[in-house]
Amino acid sequence: MHIDSFIINIKALAELLEGSEFTPIHSRVSASALAVSQMKTRKENSQRAGEMGIRDECIRSIEYLYGEFMAIADELNELKKQKEKEGTIAVKAIIATDEIIKFIGEMKMHRKNYSQSNIL
Image (cartoon, rainbow, N blue to C red; front, side):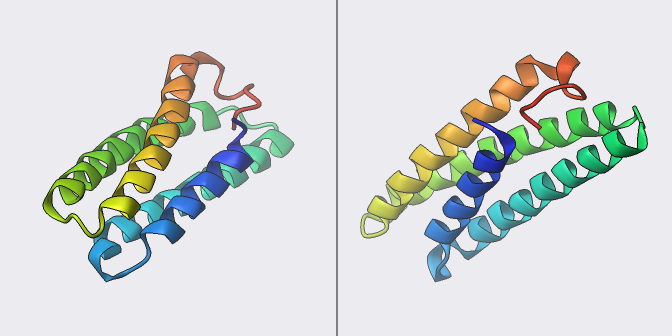
């Protein structure tokens, strides 16, 4: 998955969660989508300027996103258990969140190559 697809997936998850029952989770997912977009922009700008300090910032952002989406997955699983009628949305959201976590996990495994990676 490329970073643009990753951003699209996060935004799709946010859209799926839009609604009163999921407002807190929706807000967190939307904030994460914005954070990833900003990280991509900063990386592109720093590469154009020849700066090398973006690697550490990318690593911190990826660590934060991984923790955030793990927490979101836990919350979605709890909601699924508590509310049967929202179960379908929760199941779709859990699947999407798992894909996002998998992608972030790949980025974590390749943290040494963040600054040169095509993933970001």
